[in-house]
Length: 492
Ligand code: ATP
Ligand code: MG
Ligand code: MG
Ligand code: MG
Image (cartoon, rainbow, N blue to C red; front, top):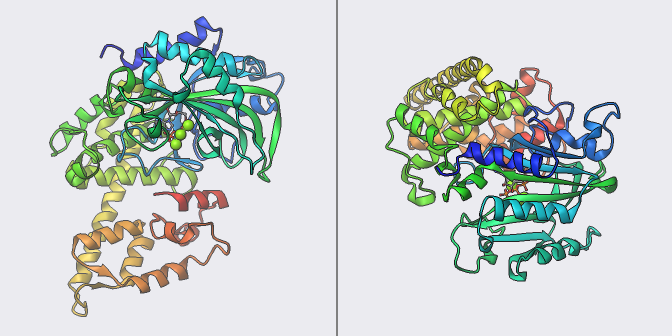
């Protein structure tokens, strides 16, 4: 392509470093250090949290940061920012992605941040201004937060037409890192992939035609443990732009998967599978979910590689449990939809390393270990899948088996003893044309999950989709925090 991803990334860093005096800080690992409020690093700002809060050790290098630029490895598969459900279904959410960001810690504020961003996009990268929309915080009376008129004026000065300048509320334009932590009003830049029309109504509407590319957050508050907002000692700027989305814009593609960050992976998946080539279809047009499977596998193997390189292994609680589910999901799509042989998933690791290893050298260093961990976990999962299939078959062949009515106790044991997600149990039975005795299964679930007295909202529905039961965690004696359980329930 004319603008390869590597060029786009390094140009972003150069622009802020050389033109605007920012200091380049390397990506932190995706495993958060010393922050129990996070499962994974979910934004470039995470590693700078102490600088925002003014709690950085004054003798540390970090305390001297004023202007910083970076390209951060991010994972959004659990906690406040969880995109797992969208991945594969749409063309612009990933579980792992790279976030390009620039920061001001008590240095420049709104005006300079907006001007630099606009000039980078429209002049430096050459994106036509009439494809861009800008959103800003319209205030929230109930929360006592005023509209951000200052930012609105700045954009008008820059030349954004009023019809392309849109106010949104807390959900879209007040960014928060997690249930607690630094936060503030934000202004976002969106790109219209179609053009030649008024697309204002498609901004923040989950449309694949108009996609958010860059978020500029004005960090002014800290969300405290008791949910109140405390004003920070100084105002800072925190921006984040998804590299994959920017590259799709600059390469003239509608889909992140059609850029050079993904095409070598999709090609490699085609080589190891029995499916036809990737066709880029979504929704009902994607019969048999083959294209979705391509996207899921490409996405998940990137996430697995990056996480394992950073020391997060598939496991039994918190982030490791999330990674275990990601691995199992990838294996199922590989084996069942793409009909790839055992070992196919790990065979993609060199392609991931080829695409990302120059920027994140730990991928090169750890590639053997990544391969081994994926293969071991895959083998274990496939053997329990097989055991599960045999158990189902044996049950169906039992003399006392009543046609169509699968015994709940067996379904429960697939879940409890073999670690199958309950939705997988349902699916496996459906594929064999049988149904489980639902009321009895629900009773068994309830009976075994009476551990938590005050369930989170959504507790019940999430439970029926869960990979591992609480009971299983407890049986294995795995320590877990309330938070890791809460996140667990929200998954998938
Ligand atoms: P969206 O509304 O599309 O889910 P967001 O508002 O949750 O995005 P931010 O928290 O504002 O995203 O993150 C900053 C930028 O990071 C976004 O503007 C986008 O370019 C990128 N981004 C966010 N989530 C993802 C993801 N799951 N995959 C790829 N890029 C992402
Ligand atoms: Mg999001
Ligand atoms: Mg958004
Ligand atoms: Mg956003």
